[in-house]
Length: 334
Image 1 (cartoon, rainbow, N blue to C red):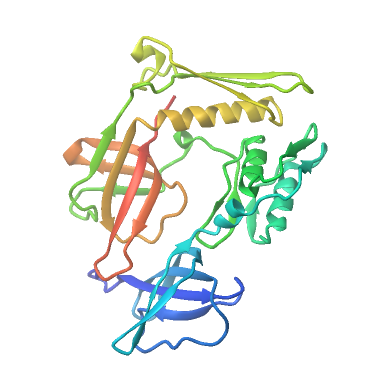
Image 2 (cartoon, rainbow, N blue to C red):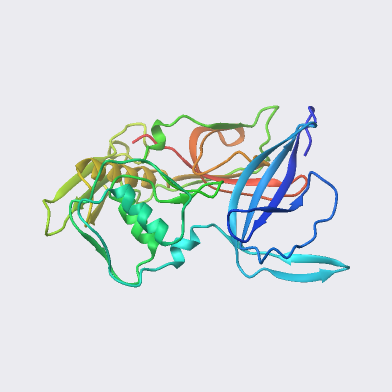
């Protein structure tokens, strides 16, 4: 797809690696020519990039690193065709289980505890926010517990996001910030310069959406903690004010670093539950600038939408004239 200034948003580049460190280009739509399979070893990962052609130079936008799963080859009129299925690197933590009781001892810094698990799975590329919180007691995980579950349990205890892999292949987690206080990073508007395709879908469902959350920390070794959050915002369609009744979500957790972390966790659960009721799905031209849970301002006059949304999923076709599909949840102030 080309624009008046001759920029091209349909270029793509594919690199492979057999060690996760050294990368070799096997496809670059910016150039003509043939790419010959080398004998450097069976590639175990692919790196995708979108390219913008500025005539004199190219700008690469990373789209992620993916692990290959038994790619197949077939010849078609003297051309080798590959059918490749690939996974986000988080599959490493999902498939790796502890083979003995795993203990994180009292006094261990939570960030270091997470890093220890990452390194035990062979992961050295990570970006984890700093924290001064430490475990107040020993925490044990049973034999056969996935390392992903261990890491996310530790991150939950300090009010961090679940771990995810960013577009550059780094395992990432940061302090949770409510989407309601974040400013939109991108705006999609159906005006004369719009890149939105017709046919946006909106789903509204407020049935059984809670408006009060009670989370209690319970274990026999420490003093119980309790956190309560109530959505009484008159501008929220699911609040106690607008529904005229209270719908409670009660949960118990065994471990949490402190009261502040429990309060953050409760707000995180409340935010996520309250955003379920309003979802949209729409298509645009290829936009290789998106990452993890971007905040969007969507102004779509045909459905009367002009709200802030949190993107939950996106996909794109790396072809000439390809389309990008977005899924997002409405951000609700509670």
